[in-house]
Amino acid sequence: MTLALLVCMTLTANPLAPGDHRRSLTVDGLERTYFIHIPKRLGNEGPFPVVLTFHGGGSDAEQMIAFSDLNSQADRAGFVAVYPNGAGRVEGVRTWNAGNCCGYAQRHQIDDVKFIRQLLDDLATAIPIDVTRIYATGMSNGAMMSYRLAAEMSERIAAIAPVGGPMGTEDCSPSLPVPICHFHGTDDQFAPFPGGRGARSLSRTNFYSVDHTIQRWTKANGCRTEPTVTQLPAEIDDGTTITKTVYAGGKNGVEVVLYTIHGGGHTWPGRQPLLRYLGPSTRNLLANEVMWEFFTRFHR
Image (tube, rainbow, N blue to C red; front, side, top):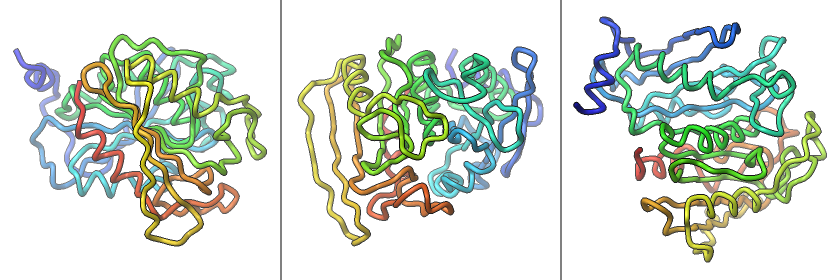
């Protein structure tokens, strides 16, 4: 029996129609919510690839929809975009327990991995999802959450694309290799590229460095230690340049890729933030397009 058939067997009689939906479930006594964007072009056929998109700390799912504009990429490429809500006492101010960060979720040891497991089970009852093509991305604390899923749910997560957030643990031991595509600005004042406490960080987290993150995952995935480094052309003079570093040759052909945005802040590449204090955002790379192209190369 194929995985696709197994998924279809769990569906309700009336799968969700294209459009935007909100769903909720109870995990460890807490109501947890998430939003789903189903492009019109998908219709009711399937199964569909899924991109889990995690908001940053002190934000929420609805803000992440606007911040990333990943719905537009979903409409163009044909995948389902899913935006989970973190935990917190104040509406619109939520965090993820991603290891050494952040806030309410970390202090109360919220089991966010369990939440995402149950979310995916619930999602599979609402639409026909392709269980071999479930991906994750996120911003800042949300990026850290995508790393935690890669480490603890590698049997379900086909690849991740963190933005502006390192791994939140000293090490990682995924049961299966997980391709990584990381984006990070060198002028990030919240989760600093070299690690440590960001000058503008509200959580005062002592972050691991980007190098620590990339090297740990290069080792975990069995990639070659000597990377291929490429300087990308700067077609727009906006004060940023981009270096692409690829650690290839991993188990099952996986890669660890780092896009270093020189001069970039705590921002989503290709999107101009509404809040200037987040720093500059490059226009020389569109993270949504790059990560989706990366995702399409891998499946579980």
